[in-house]
Length: 258
Image (cartoon, rainbow, N blue to C red):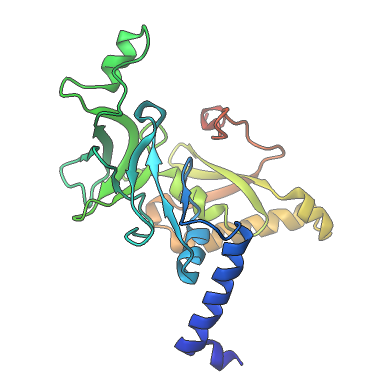
């Protein structure tokens, strides 16, 4: 049976059946599912792409009403957030947009004219050439696909001067055993992972506090194997409560970075 599962024809049939079940779970009668609002978990995206589910990931901002990037699921490149939407111009403020992350800038008829009665905020967000500065960092390939790396305000600097995007590390950490959510912080030249575990699941499985600590230490070791040396975690600390969040459900990471 195991050998059969690795045969292309059988594997394709299995994936098609799984895709059918997932599609039905969403009601079945749709063209595609558009995902946005926050970074998309890579493990989930890999699964959806593997089974051929009709999804795409968009990117936007309230100031852009709200679409900046989009691509039809037939053309969508996994890991990206699509290309510049209709009538939008998008560029990366970088000397090498394909390899060196820079701030994502955009221009178009749906970009706000300014913040109401706040000239200073308007000048900070929209430059003299009319480009709106999103505050997000990203890359753009030769075909115009945009890949978000993180927020410029959350970027950390490693001991050897490398830029570290905590959202990327957190995305991988959140997929590991017993992790509900996490925040990556910096203390001196070390990176620490703060983790809010799945306490309910731990209790159901009879795990003690020591068991949870051992699981998190194993998570740290497993994660560091796949992370570049400059952004590996020196420690994982268990956080007793859910992290405080904004109305948009983003973690208020500034509360945890000392």
